[in-house]
Image (tube, rainbow, N blue to C red; front, side):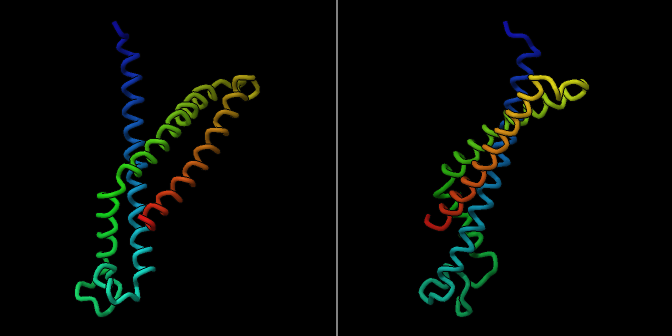
Length: 152
């Protein structure tokens, strides 16, 4: 028999993780879509054979500002959704422990002597390491999303 408060904490962490994953997935789709649209425009802007695909040529019969973006969004959601989901899952898995440590630090900061104790220092070191690791991973995943959009 599980304790209801313990189950509530687990469910709260699950909901928080789901929200983080959805947020990072949204950002991954955004970065990949914009990168794909810009690369499509850049590499095919003067190509008369693909002007209708790139929608960047004046002679295109279907010229529209949103056409490269919609084509890139379709490509991202059709071919690259697994890569985007994996990258956003990894970012969410790193962000959740950092948020938990931030919450613990906030709760312990109400105690005036926390910053000088060994546990307070250890908590701040762990937060700093997780923050650096998260920023490096975010940079790597953003470059990976751009590479997926340009080469995919």
